[in-house]
Length: 297
Image (cartoon, rainbow, N blue to C red; front, top):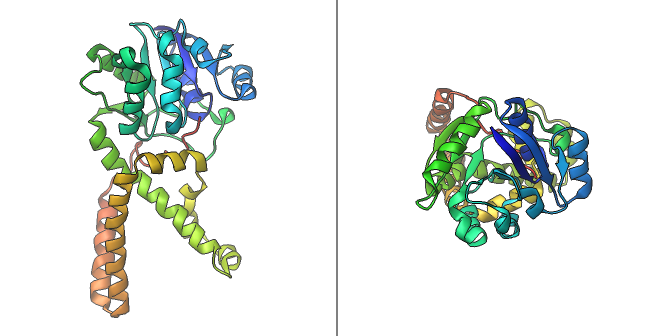
């Protein structure tokens, strides 16, 4: 059991982690900080945190486990702000959707305490944001990807794995390069496409009319376009090299389909659709499927 969780970012992801630790009896006290004092106070009123900290540093001071649930673009500044409050025994983790940039931010911000940091990405979330939507079961049965580097203390990797497993998550470990490449393909690009699709639709003169006729297909395809703009701006920019590579692959596949349509090649078009259908049918949905539509702080 941990004595104190220092929670930086009292939103859906961080709040759910705090509630999960409490439910599993893995922490005695939660001290929370958010940029918005009203958010932190609301978290206290809801019982997500026990104590409101006036700064990130004070939330971390005395904590033996720390979770950063902030936008990835704010990572380095946050690491710098808390560095002097981290002891040699403190386990530090994040919940960012990109890992290479966060690791570099931690290296620069934590400096001598960098070995305490275990990068983590829980594949969980909702389309709605805010502390009011935090729930202890958010991570139950979900995958959590850890991406430690050579400098990371092995003991902290083990502790991180035990923490996430202790709240019901399934832990996977990989390099940050593997992580960012994989999630560009299965999460970041789909979001980019959903944003582009909805923008293209509403930009048309009859966009509103088209929307009024939309049904389940539009609902399912466009669901993740309802995600938090600030978060996804940061994610797409942070992992832009890998996302752009995936976008190029998608462009080629789309152009191939357009060419088949233009040539009225029914047989080849059907074969292409059938190949996609077969691949999609073979995929077994599990708890790691893209629930990361909303990872807020």
